[in-house]
Length: 427
Image (cartoon, rainbow, N blue to C red; front, side, top):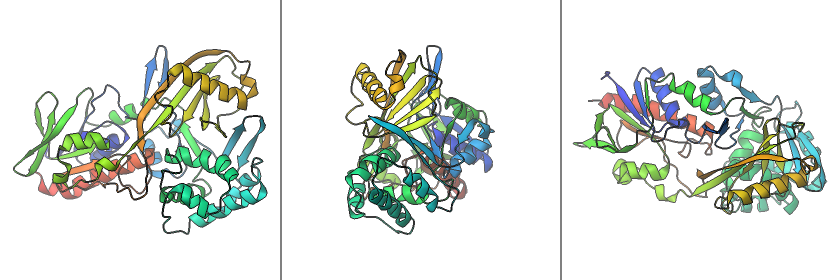
């Protein structure tokens, strides 16, 4: 065994980021993933002769750590990012309109975009602009997002035609459940951060290519290798115990898994200085993939107003992915019903699709896509009571919402914790 070797449990973005950061710091890492696929929630798989992502994942211009992570893999050319913030808005019975930012200093660069929002009155547009501008200077916003918007005197129209299409997907939670501070962070970091912060990007290749590229730079990756628990002896974390009963010695361990899985691995989280895992309430995301015989739809993505599907992405000519966030009332519905729902909503907002023939449909569901950023929720950081045991995951306290950016930040922070603290206590 190498002088210093760390086990990383979980092959999602957080675990892969931790392993690569450990390697950069001169420590060998081995990754253990219970499933056959790497990437966690950011992966893809084949259905017949088609490879699809397990949901539509986007990144923003402010996702600096995620973009750096992809750059270290040599895949920057496979990421596409807007030059300026621009979003097409679709609404049943109305002509599409486009929000397009200007090359002005933030947050004033968004004013032309709001001016172009024809579904809002002038007072509503001014209310939104004022709230975005104020968010950057606020230190903290108490209560729920819905309460905060009410305090900002946001109208019902502003909520329906701006805040819900943008904040509900960003938070993956109803406005009545998410914290106002989480919403303020979105506004301050993305909308009011810089001219490029809110620019929307996505990968030009299936998401699995990112995970595969990361795995190629890591010493050893084991798929279909579930870990049952931490191996602890004489008050020291010695390694991991696999589901088949084997114990494997390591100088440190990074647990890059969701809250419930973390509780199972630790068995008694309080012994490791970890608390509050039961307070994380999962939120689902449903994606409905539709293939039409129309290939002349002139948009990459669009927000759909007043609809259960908030966004639609054209991933290839005629291939649309409908994204339904905070989908508690939809995740258990039959696939045929979800396909009918999305097809009806799209035809109402995009009349060109009313006569299009549906060639194929597929539904993907993630019942625990993220966790509600509820008021007062306390998220653990990478540190535990053991200097050679760290926690990672998009859901942990990185200062960011549960996103690809948060996943990468968490993995890198866990690796640094292990090297700075744990290696001094290695066997």
